[in-house]
Amino acid sequence: YMILIAVTLAVAAIPEGIPLCVTISLSIGCSEMVKKNVLVRKLAAVETLGSASVICSDKTGTLTEGKMTMVNMYAGGVEYDVEGKGFDPTVGGIRRGKGGTDAKADVAVRSSLLAAVLCCNTTISKVKDPETGDEKWEPKGNSSEAPIVVAARKVGLDEKISREYKRILEVPFSSSRKMMLTMSDVSGRDVLCAGGMPLPQGTQMLSVCKGAPNFILDYCTGQLAEDGSTTPMSAKDKQDVLDVVDKYSERALRVLAIAARPFDSMPFDTANEDITTDQKFEACRSNLTLLGLVASIDPDRDGVPESVLAARGAGIR
Figure 1 (tube, rainbow, N blue to C red):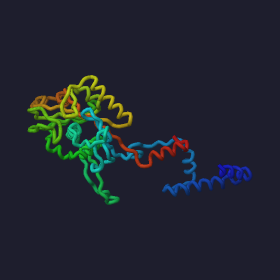
Figure 2: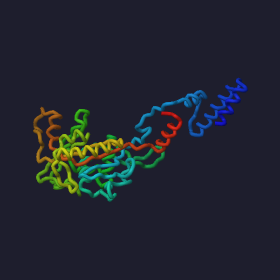
Figure 3: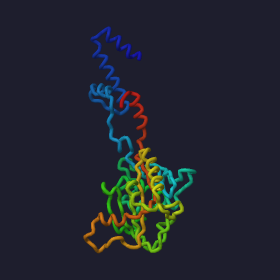
Figure 4: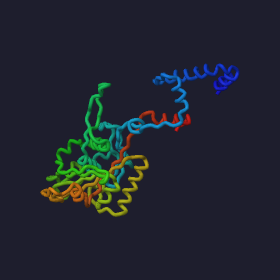
């Protein structure tokens, strides 16, 4: 404040000194910006920055890390916290929301994540950073599927396990269907996976849907219980699940629902070449069992919250 008074008095006493004062002020601004690794080529740019009132910025990859990370999941009527950040599956684990006990052996968790992996086309692997030479984990595929694959690895379910379940059919995600569907061969199995839910006797194939919760719930008639059993799903049960979805969505989490149905035979005539993809989809999506929900977020970059607060303090929106 005193500097402002001094400059005001100097300009009032000697009006010809205003260009000098402005130049000195802008030069000081340039000097401060250089200390923060900002190179200014023209002094006028400092004045323009000083008069900024609104900052428009891209979110993904700029304000955020561009690394979708699973932070919560819901399976068997239980909410779970997923620890860790980024794509490294060796960091963190899955714990019950209440009590904090390790949940990697829970039937509902393993069943939900394996089914989700069977409905994914994404893999993660270590690659060498060309700049630093350090190894880091990177996904290859859809950014929405990456957190599922990472979480599955945290409970010991490598995405390569999907090779043990031959994929028979895939109906890709579309804006109209709001979900993706796969049909996998599970013949000869009495449980979905080690520590997973039991499969009905005679099960040959498993249909898995992954997508928008409100759309998938419309096709669900059952739900997975905490002990791995299947119970009927009432209208109240669906509303309870939607309440969980709303709670996650209020925290800006991206929520996907996972549902499945075992079949003893293909629900459509495979010899009929005239059957459309939509008809196959309709035949495989009925009477589903809700396995769980997965909720992910793209975490903030380090320093972003502080930068936003600093901008607000300067009167910048």
